[in-house]
Length: 335
Ligand code: NAI
Image 1: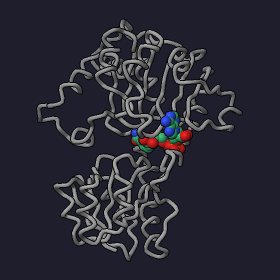
Image 2: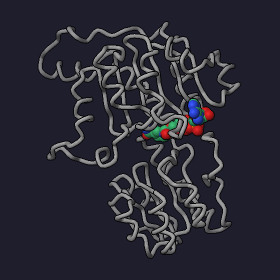
Image 3: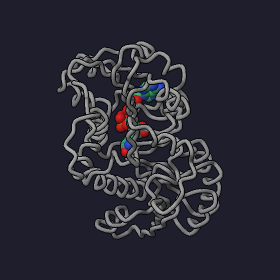
Image 4: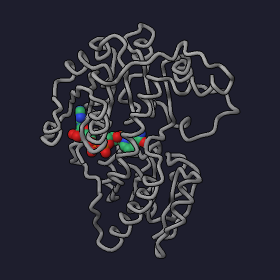
């Protein structure tokens, strides 16, 4: 099995080399997989891709002209893959369903705490000898209402963490879970969640139903000063609408680990370049916006799990022609 690993960064290379199975030959490519780069996979049996690779119908057609029989995602979300086209071309799509739900849930809390208590500002101030508390006023999370959209693996761990603060927790999910109800969480309609929540955290996948779930209308229903956290997928949020929400003060805090136009920005060192995305630059001008570069998953444990599950997926495909982590076109968005 010859595998082309697209979007390779140092951490990917180090991890995948460390425990490489003998019968998988791995070639690391720094390029993202796009229609322009897909031809690089011509001589390979499989491609391994990440969140910002564009596995469109066009890309899949190019892969199918070569020998590619498997697309191995190094992530849980599969919104960037045209599953119907992959099925049509007889290419199996596999993924890593859960590499560290703890990492993502804990990062969501990190965004909340930093936005609320302004650790980033305090850190810089103290280093400059400024010990003033002006501008650092936060709020108690205890007693606040938290709205969780998507109560799957990450959402449930996030609920467990936040329960420790003594929050009232509301949730919305297309498929409510009894286990979540048993924790004392109340499922409500989205509009109700928007109306009542002080903090809203997104943990649903990106699909047709959830694209721009946070839009102008949703924001109009929210409490003034609400905190919105997105550690799921960028396009869940209409960025233009949240910018208006921030300007009007309806949105009091915004924490993003993902951004709808993150391709080509996130994971790259652009410190010597002029950022061309004016919307992103505008977002950075708000003092109450905190952005991280899709790092919520990035823990030692998660990186190890990504590698191990990816290799296991490929080994299962080689030996049985099937894979328990295959992504099916008939999926409900539930995993
Ligand atoms: P999961 O599949 O366990 O849970 C997703 C939940 O969303 C399910 O309960 C499902 O019923 C629900 N859902 C589906 N459609 C919905 C809709 N229309 N409205 C509301 N809820 C809906 O997935 P998991 O592992 O909890 O991951 C959630 C998301 O987190 C992933 O889809 C991925 O986009 C994102 N993620 C982000 C990472 C990061 O580094 N920032 C890393 C890993 C995942």
